[in-house]
Image 1 (cartoon, one colour):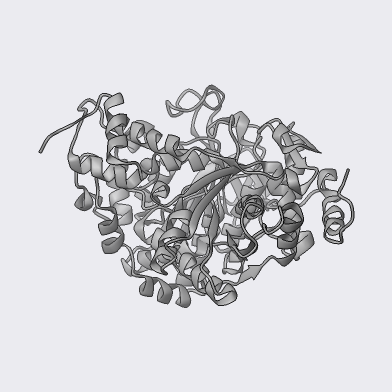
Image 2: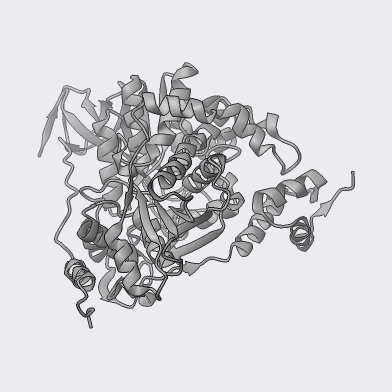
Length: 474
Length: 104
């Protein structure tokens, strides 16, 4: 496996086109604009098809569990009449034990259906195990490329565990040291093998998550007689928020508030060899959540089907220490040992439920399995080994990379809102930068940016003007 | 020194991009170290010692070259000791639900 870095990266468009089999150009409508719904409709799968594929793959139909003790705890902290009912979608019940099986089942089905001999995924997360598990069922080859260790050889315990799981399903696991050139290795593997790119961000991967939204809608109605008032998802690359929101809308939950939650890792550089092992969360954090919100097309496909600014009503952050605290609370009060990264949404939901009326329903989207390395004990012991201080105290004192603060009281668990309008403007600025020398766009581009960010046309035009971009008159 | 024999399950390491040839956008600390790859497979050579350049055949039947790093590479990630900062939480929360006073 060799190749000049620059030359391989220059071939990325061609390699990706062959490896996903989608002609993205077909949906292009301007320099920036593309037909998102057209792409989802023509290259994705219908809800009925997704349900059939997932049923056949043993994926989905996971339970929605009421968290009665955590709801009681919420109410001890809330003003009278406040304290919403908490439910959790227990996605750890999927075959490879996370919601990522929903995406993987579609990717692997699509790969097999289109005659690919194997699948490749660039992922340090649960998705690797999900793809490996689905590929094993279909007798397809599977290669997972993951970022695992720093230059001193220390492996992030959670990622090491995920690598083990991939190998348990028979995958070849390429384990890399820290750096974004993982993508270069991924491209080389795609070229060498002509395998399918089981990207997290294809239309079928996102279509695979829509069932999460429809199941939440149906189960919440059955259990409570109402639509969910709020669905809180752990936000990283944007897939779960986008897919779940689309599913909820298809099920008619038009009033449900869509909330994204990420662990705050502000100040840590995601490509830094030094910072890599100073974070205790490998996903669900702001290091993915913010960059993917403000420029979704940074992904491994030309057009990312996960576009959260279209769906998010609120975006909040929580601290690492608060998530570890809630992971412990979920185990000790509800008898559910899950996470920890998946419990980012639980932590945000716990704080948000205190502000909502008692009759309201908050759904926590979702749980993931826990295990050796992938557990608060392992993460905190590793953090201390890497020189991070771990103590109890006021979560406000947490400093990512140097101090993790486990709250002293549940009432100290709060969410910090992220200004979505700031992210929307940042998206438009990134779009301006992507234009290159020619700073002219069409009315269709303006309409697309408005739809993709939920900014008004006037607001889009203002940001375009500020960045020296003019709108050509038709 | 460990000797591996043909067909044994081993792990190899290889430098993919040496320091100085990293992607232009990486921060200084990352640019100063090589991008390394580790992969496991069955040893192709008759015998080899750790540190020698060898070929492995992976679970997919693909071959990779690299320096032999370990034989029967273990999965040694565990849970570790229960952290002091988490140990009291369960009791505190159960106490709160029983209407007892909160942790001071």
